[in-house]
Picture 1 (cartoon, rainbow, N blue to C red):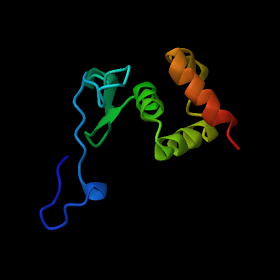
Picture 2 (spheres, helix red, strand yellow):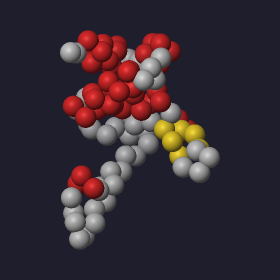
Picture 3 (cartoon, helix red, strand yellow):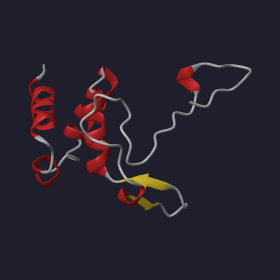
Picture 4 (cartoon, rainbow, N blue to C red):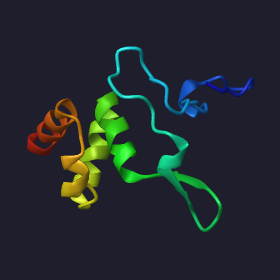
Length: 100
């Protein structure tokens, strides 16, 4: 994590995630490869939706669950994305989908 010396707050820091490595030791999936991204018209590398959904479901923090809720509400998580998820992540997605 990169932090400012003047304000070393992790909330405002830059979190580095290394491609094809586990973010946490107990995660089943590695972080996505850089090939799972595309370039925006402004030149930024943007992670594809499927690996983003996988990362959010794997982390499973409240903030990640809320992001998944938003994606579901917007219709971004299509059947092809859902069908490609490992069973454990499908279960988490279904849990988020059915939460009040």
